[in-house]
Amino acid sequence: MDRLTQRKLFSALCHGAIFFSSTIVSVGVPIGILLTTEDSVVKDNAKESLNFHINLYIYGFIFALLTLFIIGFPLLVILIIVSIFMPIIAIVRVLDTPDVSYRYPFIFRLL
Image 1 (tube, rainbow, N blue to C red):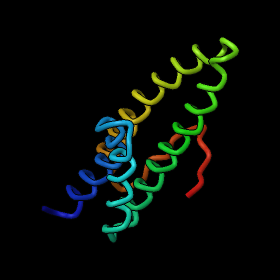
Image 2 (image 1 turned 180 degrees about the horizontal axis):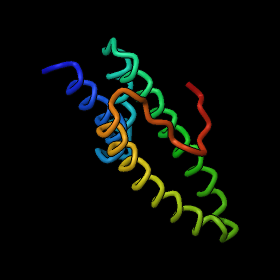
Image 3 (image 1 turned 30 degrees about the vertical axis):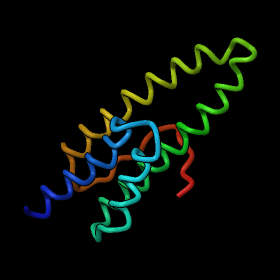
């Protein structure tokens, strides 16, 4: 497998890991790729994917607490929609331009 194909595959796998499950598997795949790859673009995509996962968990916890005040329900629906469409956009972008790492908008970058 050539370097460009490997970069596309691992970058798409990092962003698509959220579709495997919402548990530790979705976080474990980008961590595993981050620790094993030497490609800087793939590492950047893995970090960005981890940041997106962490943000989703934080927002999900906050919005779940807000369901006690009724306003959390629409926010949870928006969060579910975002958690489906943003990784799809990221996968399309990394497959289209594999030399540039994808950056999710409106997230806090902790890593």
